[in-house]
Every structure is written in C-alpha cells, then in structure tokens.
Image: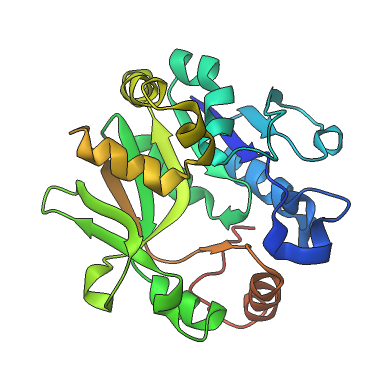
Length: 250
C-alpha cells in the first residue's frame, strides 16, 4: 500500500507564514507538518510515499516519490490528486492532506477498512471546532452516514448540528478499482470545472454517481492546521493533559 500526500497548494490562509515555503513546512511542536505526516504513515506501516508538489516544490525533498502539479496556482486539490493517478491506478493508496496531523492508529484503521473508496471522520469534532472558530457552524460541513456506514451527503453548508455526524478529516483511501471509477468521472468533466474542484465536492459527485463511500469513525487525535489560529490552538492545547485531539504517539 502507498500513501499520497497532497502538498501542492500555498495555503493562503496562513498569511505570511507561507510567503517563502509551502504550508506543510510550517512547524508544530518543533516539527514541520510534513514530517508529522510522513512519520505517522511510516509508523502505520506505509513506507512507499508519493508527494504531490506545487508551490515551492524544490523545498519538498526526501525519501519519497513525487507527482508535481505545475499548475498549482490555477487548480485545486483534486487536480493534484490527478497528477498522482499512475500510482492510484497501480496500488491501493491512503491519501492525506498536507495540513493535517494524525495518530498512526487512524491510518491503520483506514488501511484495514473495507471498501474501494473510504474516508475517516471525527466524531469528537465539535470541541476542536469550538476552539478554532467563534461559531463552529460557520465552517463545519454536513456529513450524513447511513446504518451501513455509507456516506449519503458530505461537504454541504450545515444549517444545524443535527446535520453533522462528524467532520471529514482529509484522510482517505482508494483501491485501484475505486480510483478507476473516480477517474472516469473526472475525465468526463469540463476542464475549467475540474480545475476548480475541491475534494468534498468530488466526494459528493461520487455519491451522486452511485459509487459507495465507506467510512471509518475516529475519536479525536488529529488536528487541521489551516490558519495561524489553528497553529496557535494546537500548540497551546497539545501541552495540556489529556487533550482529546493530541495526535502524538511517542
């Protein structure tokens, strides 16, 4: 099994912190986010890693293969995923955003999960969102899952907490068969629409196509670093006792 880290974007919500480097090279507790991701994946048993690079790609070097998105400033994350298509066609791949940190147990659970397209989601999302945002509903998106663990809706604007069974984390898995179905869908889209497509919008299109998306529910032990506020929140609370979103395993 391989892993694909999607690290092509600049991360404009980090403001000046990404003027000279990609978002994933910002440090959290003394390590770049990029290092936390690689170490978690390797701890879970995935040593074959592919990195989708773009902005300041020359700074992302190491023991991994690369899939470069040289149109990073004109496209969204799904386009970077398409740049890694040769790897996704050949092997089952865990796909990770580059602005998250997570416990290796979440990767292990995802690796073991049944299904051709699988996502992880956090059932303890609300305490984390309350630290990150004055109004959690301003950012939180819908996630509705049926009794089989199959997603019925994802990524829409939530009107109430009842529409949110958890929050998608940016950690997912494709088998070659699952990716083949997704790639067929993407190849049918107009290029301009494909360029703008974000991941949850893709997942919603997959659902509408009738392709099942399985789920793995987890309880905390991860963080998203999408802004300077997120960086401050995670740094502060990781040093408190028994914080439910502490991702560290050492």
